[in-house]
Length: 68
Image (cartoon, rainbow, N blue to C red):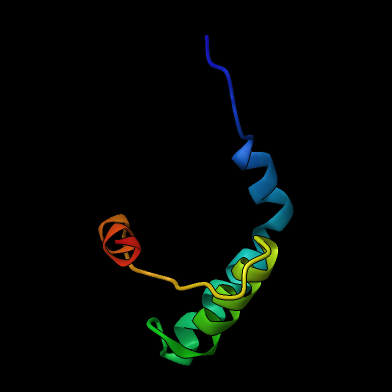
């Protein structure tokens, strides 16, 4: 028996065009690291969580290191 905690496929179908547009924008900008898209994501993520700052990192290990 499979229990879905998050129906990501249904959500993806709803947001698919926006997701693909965002990925296309980042790749075409040539700024996969840093840049305006990352800065905007950090600001929006922090605001969503009600904190003043957010920092994007490339993996979980660096997130833990940053937290230490």
